[in-house]
Amino acid sequence: MTPGSPPKISFKTQMLLAREDAIITVVNRLLAEKGFEAMTVDEVAAQVGIAKASLYKHFPSKEDLAAAAMVRVMRKAQDFLKGLAPDGAPMQKLRAVVRWTMELKLAGGMPSLPSQNSSLRATLIANKDYMNGLIEVSDALGAWIEAAQEDGSLNPKLPAIAVLYTLYARACDPVLEFLKMGDQYDDARIVDLVMATCFEGLNAR
Image (tube, rainbow, N blue to C red; front, side, top):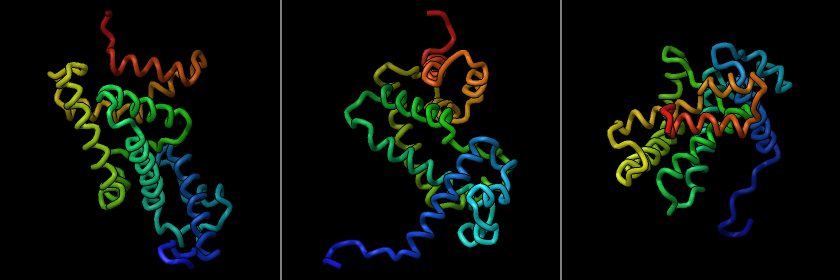
């Protein structure tokens, strides 16, 4: 190993990481399709193709399984935000983030958020990676919201926290599924329609 190079990962470790990646991918899809409460550890193990006992060696509980999937999506969000042009207009950045979340949801890559009384919420609150990511994303969006209000592109009368939660809600908006079920619009058009109602509102212009 040359000086400064990362340590070589053993074949066994590579296999374990690959299996964990496969598990999280299945969990993410199941959370998107049916939500945390309806998902079972048995179906995760069956779809990955491993015994439930082997699954528990990686993740000791159903909550830990779901938390790992939520952390993965949060990291994707962090990476997406970092990839936006730093000199872009605040409103353009906000629109780009909302569009990305809705496209991810329509593609089946956005886990459904847990209910208020879900055991998963407690696990997520205790998960340092998830909470740090949530704080980072919220801080970035909050700063863009305030900047957009200052430049007049966003209603300054709305509390920034209300705008933030409204934008977060687009990541689990059932309107996306309702429109998709109707088979009248493709995914791109569905995103455009919901973007319009979110940012332009329903009043006639």
